[in-house]
Length: 307
Image 1 (tube, one colour):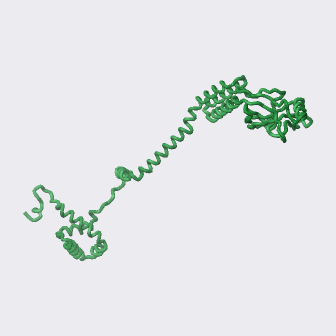
Image 2 (image 1 turned 135 degrees about the vertical axis):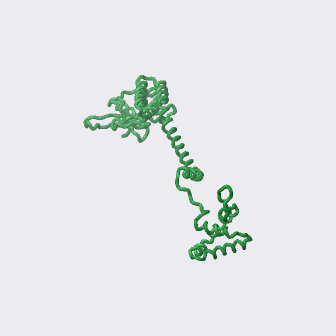
Image 3 (image 1 turned 45 degrees about the horizontal axis):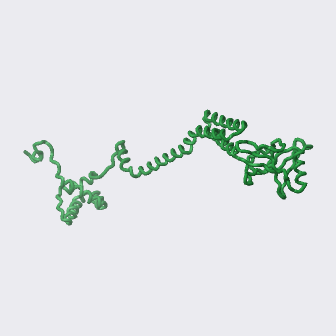
């Protein structure tokens, strides 16, 4: 049996180096890398490798470590072959998943913030748009019922019914904008029906009790108006929506001009000229449940808000 045959055990496979030798070889490689300049110079020049091995042996001897020659040779050879060096695994699904897991703390905060933002947006959308829209049918019916209970005249009930039908048709057509407008109009109608006030002709120093206008379509005619003010039971002014027949605009005012005939206008003028006081200054009364005042003097119902 020759030396080569003696190196092979009966099992037929070469013996692996002892674990201590492997660990020492790894340490040798690590030492060589820390002395990168020395290694690059010694290994690049032929014949200097033996000097490098001798230096390594002295380095370990100074640390009290006896490193066999074959271990130092293994370390130098490993450095040449770039062994004991970490090389990242090539890209793949398994690696990507592993990286995602490792970096979960970094992107988890971002993802959590994104989820929170989406949840907030969904909540805002629900409470600002979805929920109010879903409540519209019930609100429309409720408001119509309230207004119908307040109304004491047919014209008030008919006005409420027209608005309600407009809102219901809008809901059927999936038009929440028009339905909301109908809801607002029912609220405004309810406010008007709740109002109660007396109309009195203005009789204060420096303020006119009546005015007349020349219409654009007939410069030979005159339109007469008595200036009235809406007052509640305590004498405080009440703001009322009034449509200006000259502009077609509706304004909320407490004082406006009501159109009368020339005979009524002259009667009030003479009453005021008599002693400076208008004895008969009550022009009408608006009870709750009514859309318009009940006038106590002749009037067409036309009005102006500026003079």
